[in-house]
Amino acid sequence: MRKAFPALADKTALDGRATAYACRSFACQAPVHTAEQLAAQLDEVPIRAGDAAGSSTG
Image (cartoon, rainbow, N blue to C red; front, side, top):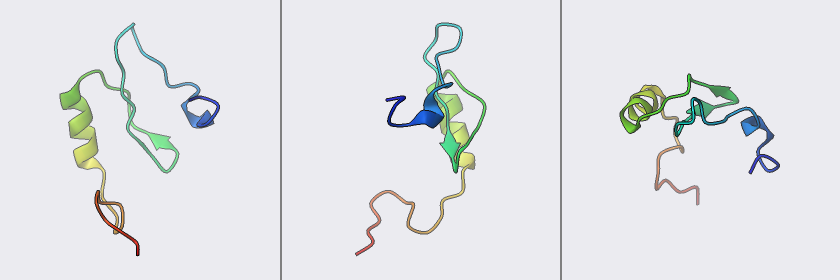
């Protein structure tokens, strides 16, 4: 996957734990280890028109 997405090259598991990175427009928030922490970060990300799941462009 790192070849397909070079921006992910330095995104690794921290402290041997599953680690999630919430990134948008080539900028990432601090890595987190729990679903609750990830959900909180995703709740903070504004959704632009056309970004919502299930939206269509044509």
